[in-house]
Length: 68
Image 1 (cartoon, helix red, strand yellow):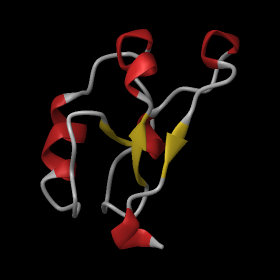
Image 2 (image 1 turned 90 degrees about the horizontal axis):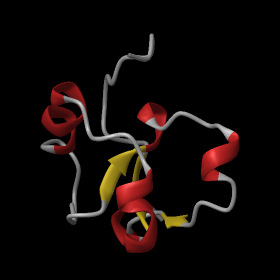
Image 3 (image 1 turned 120 degrees about the horizontal axis):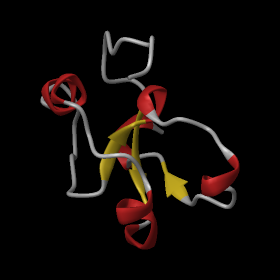
């Protein structure tokens, strides 16, 4: 478990569908915080909860239109 804690939904990103199964599953906290995000999709994640490691090098994601 990561020491980070979700506190808002400003880091909401949409991960490329090809990557969703390669990332750790969404925690219960992350799922709850996504309820505060706009334009949530099945591939939505809180980027503050993604653990950066060599296995996800090349990860592709985008920022939802509502956050531009």
